[in-house]
Length: 356
Image 1 (cartoon, rainbow, N blue to C red):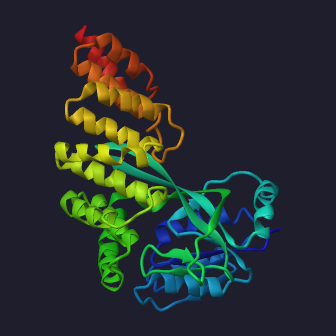
Image 2 (image 1 turned 90 degrees about the vertical axis):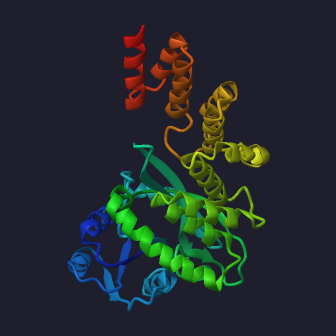
Image 3 (image 1 turned 30 degrees about the vertical axis):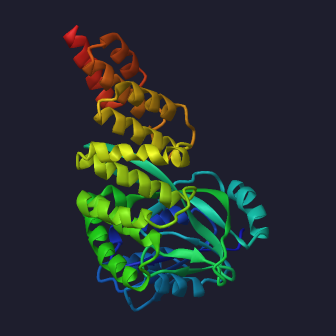
């Protein structure tokens, strides 16, 4: 048994919480739930599974709630999980012990979990995988920030990271209505946070993402521009995502020429398949089809990626679209066939075969 406490803050999450707790109960971890004012059956469900259930008066500060929950844990090693997430790991506990036990010797490091986020883009369902720091030693780290809180050491020093191999599915993201409500709530809290910290690019990133989710691309673009005006590190995951989201906003607004300015940051971001795919879309929308095909092919050969399919069937599909539009039906059919069971590619195959 590993000395790990799973800490969860929740409010009115009866729809998701039982699945979350049931999956966690497969392992012999302590489960600590802190409720911030539920009026549904959330507390009743929590008491069925959790070792501890506490109440925290909500004060519009996620870090305060999380730190309170962490303070109630019996163990120093904390795995932070949201109540609308559920554990995807199926391996027996002894295998996770083999993975995690050596990491417990390095409390100055933070463990990354893999958050699986479903989303809809262009009418197509897709999935993004985000590595986020959620496994930590509470004597070395605590949460800061009233919204989209981050783990920081007391002295503000940067942390090293290790991979926990833990995977969670963000079920709340699969419901568009829930996602819209949370984005609207987050916008209010993020704007409050920016009043206190106007020079924090991470807050601009999160605010822009909230507008992006609501399809408010004009506001999202404006916010992303402000965030990217700072001296940001292109190697940080959130910076890469902010750049890519900004590019997709420009394309959604049909600002194709403006999007071409991304050529100026190509060297800094081209190690990521998602950015290469974005460049392919930018060239494609500007009628630069040869350049677009080259970028899509590079994306298909690049291992580092966030969105599932963005280094395989998605670039192949877009190459197929280009060739189909150019009347090169044989090439179009060839690339559509590379896409496997991707529904849009199957439709492309039908179109090409019908037209020949």
